[in-house]
Length: 289
Ligand SMILES: Nc1ncnc2c1ncn2[C@@H]1O[C@H](COP(=O)(O)OP(=O)(O)OP(=O)(O)O)[C@@H](O)[C@H]1O
Image (cartoon, rainbow, N blue to C red; front, side, top):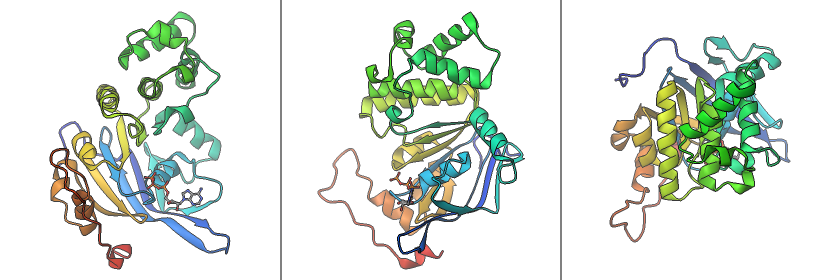
């Protein structure tokens, strides 16, 4: 059953049979994403979990049209907000994605411009979506955005350069930049895995508030199963480039696929962690299912 805040009508985003591969030195094409399909409803939070290399980040990048130039890819369908991304001219697609899809990566250092202040970067982000915004109203938006992510001294932080910010502060600034300007979808790729647990919790609280307030859909890419269970509505479990199981996030603990069960068993409990965690026994049949 869908949670109440999700209306089930036309999906905001739909990917059908996405395949992404890379050619090795011997010319052989190895597929990293092998026929992935998913749908995201407006306002929905979809978690994508799976071990390193299962194709989570490539999936998010494919949607944004930001795959590496060496990638060979195809899809039967890729739609966003009722538009066909596959047939849209590249320039129009960049504009649509730039205005309506935001992305937060693991480390803000790589996403922020090191020679622009917080204020300059926030202004640029706002003007991308509202080109006529300038002067005091634009300054006010910057201040409001910093306040919305619980930055207590916004005027001081606005003048700072990225290297002057802590990891948590940088990530809050990314959230301010991505969410406050009103995208319909936010792709958060391991947004808190570089932060310590307390700072991560503060950043997630901010993300939770803003996503709920703006009714932004969320594609939340993570290794952290308990986090995804508590933060998302639905979870897609990826193994070797495919979605092997999708379920309501609250039902993840009762997941049935042996890979998902293996991931759950390998999640260390906070209380009484065992001396050794079980090693996942992989069945070659999972690759073809
Ligand atoms: N630029 C590239 N060139 C060659 N192979 C690549 C490239 N980018 C990704 N791959 C391959 O695709 C696989 C999946 O990459 P992806 O970044 O989607 O993994 P992921 O599930 O997000 O992993 P992680 O959790 O570690 O970020 C990689 O393990 C790698 O084999």
